[in-house]
Amino acid sequence: MMEQQTSVKVMTAHELTQLLFAQEELFILDVRNTSDYENWRIEGHRVVSMNIPYFDLLDGVESVLEKIPVHQKVLVVCAKEGSSIFVAEMLAEAGFTDVSYLQGGMKAWSDHLEPVKVGELRDGGAIYQFVRIGKGCLSYMIVSGGEAAVVDTLRMTDVYEAFAAKHQWTIKHTIDTHLHADHISGGKKLAERLDASYWLPEKDAEEVTYFYRKLEEGQEIQVGATKIAILPIYSPGHTIGSTSLLVDDTYFLTGDSLFVASIGRPDLAGKAEDWVGDLHNTLYNRYKELPEHLVVLPAHFGSYTEIGPMGVVSARLGDLYRNNPGLTIADESEFRHIVTHHLPPQPNAYQEIRQVNMGKLKPSEEEQQEMEVGPNRCAIHDK
Image 1 (cartoon, rainbow, N blue to C red):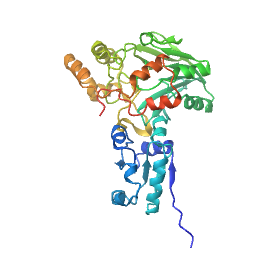
Image 2 (cartoon, rainbow, N blue to C red):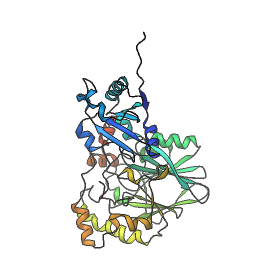
Image 3 (cartoon, rainbow, N blue to C red):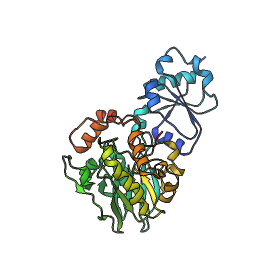
Image 4 (cartoon, one colour):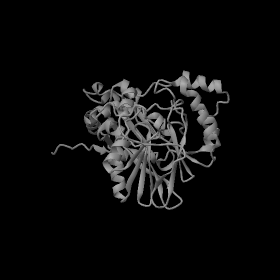
C-alpha cells in the first residue's frame, strides 16, 4: 500500500494581498517568537491569527489542533519560510485539507508592493497607488502621455520599473515629499537608473550628499504632453521641508503630514517641540483652505481598516475634517500637548534610515531589509 502524500500549498505575498483586499476569511498560525508577533503581524478584516512559537511545535501539533478551524483556509507564517513549511506539513498530515505557508515569510511580506489603480486623470492619464501592505507604506505613479512620475518611491525600485515597462511608460521624475525616516527611499536610485529627475524639498536636504532638484511651492512638474501638472504645496510639520502635491486639481498627495485615520508625527528628527506649531498650521490652516472634494492620498496607513474597496487607501479631505481625530482638536494648546506627549514608539532604526536617505550610510540590501522590519509608526493616532 502506497504511503499517502501530504498536500501543502504555497501562498505568495501577492496572493495573500488579494485575499485581504477581497476580505476573505483566513486563519493564520504565526510561528515566530511571541515578541516579534506582538510587535508586527498580518491583519485583515476577516483574519484571525494565533501565535504559537515554532519551538513549541517541534514535537508535534497535537496540542494546538483543537484551536485551528478544520474547514477554513489556514496559512502558516514564519520569519523567512522554513519553519512554516515544517509546521504546515504537520497540519496537513493531521488532516487539514486547506493549509498553505507564506512564501518567503514575513521578510517577503515586508517587501511586497501591490499596484492598485486609484483613478483616471482628466486628460487621459491615471494615478496608481503602490500598497506596501506588510509595512503600511504607500507610493504613487502618476501617468500621462506615455510618461510617469513616481512619488515617495520605496527601495524596491524594480517593481516600479517593471510596471512602467509593462505599459510602455517612461519614468521621467521621482519625487520625495520629505526626507523619510521609517523606510529607505528608492527615489534617487530609480532616477539614476533611468536618467530621470529626482526631486526633494530643499529644507529637508541640508545634509544630503547628492544632487537633487528642489521641490518648491509654485512649481509645476509636467508629466507627459497632456500637461497633467503636479503642484507642490509647502506643508511643514512632519519634517521642516514636508511638501504635498496637488495633482490634476483632484488628488492630494499629503506625504506623512495627513493620513486617513491619523496625522503625522513631528519628532523623527528630534524636533517635536519646534515643529508641532508648523504641523498645526499645515493641518488647521493651510489644508483647511483647500477644496473639500480633494482625494487625500497619504504616504502611509496605520491599520488595515483604512484600506478601502479594491485595496485603495484614500479619503475626501472634507470627510477627514469631520472624522479624523487629529483634525478635530479645537484647542491649539491641547493639540500641542497630544502631539508631543502621546507619541507611539519610534520606527525601527529610524536614525540610521535618515542617514541612508541623506546618502551618508550605504548599507547592503540585507542590512536595508533588516532596518525596515516592523510597522512604520509615522502617525500620532495609530493603534
